[in-house]
Length: 245
Image (cartoon, rainbow, N blue to C red; front, top):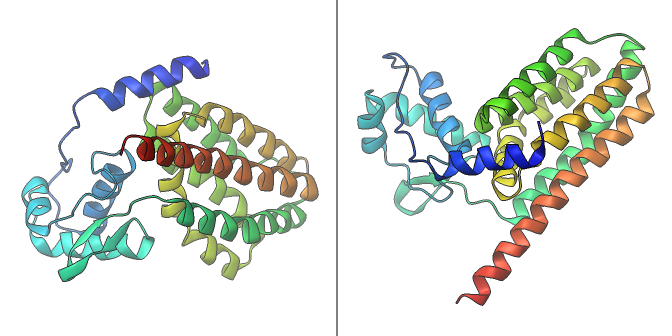
């Protein structure tokens, strides 16, 4: 699919009325509630900066305040939600500082974890990662941006967990939610996920070929390019806001 067609599908989806939050089935567990709120944040049904009021979320999702409170605490730990004055909560507002912080953290650790993973495995196919790339393509075709962001993270995790180092894996896992938030926000500014999927394909080829240095280099370039594009978009948005005030 061409990038232009993907851009048009995404723009159409963003212009359509936001779907209300709902649960597929009645549940009262924080994890399920967390997943629904997280998806709403990633696809901008809950836009950046939106206040997250327990009473309102409870009414929308048809659950008590207890699982809502549990879900918001988990989302705060992941970085998607931040505390406000008077013990309130709101969706994080993305800025250049958090993009740089997450990017620097990933570049410092993830390429090395990938190098260790390839070194440990040698040349061998990775069927799980290939399946994730196929699922990614289906999500691009469908324009499912929030799910695409989560699938993107699954792909990265499928590779770096092969390093076998629990400390590195735990560190990178803690960045998962913010990395997804950054990716989906960047795609709203400019839909680069089709080209990023192609980069994932090249990365997996180096991984399966048993080329640790090549895979490490590609991943570092991939992370840097994505962050650079988003930082440029944020700078343009700031400049435009300045000219209209």
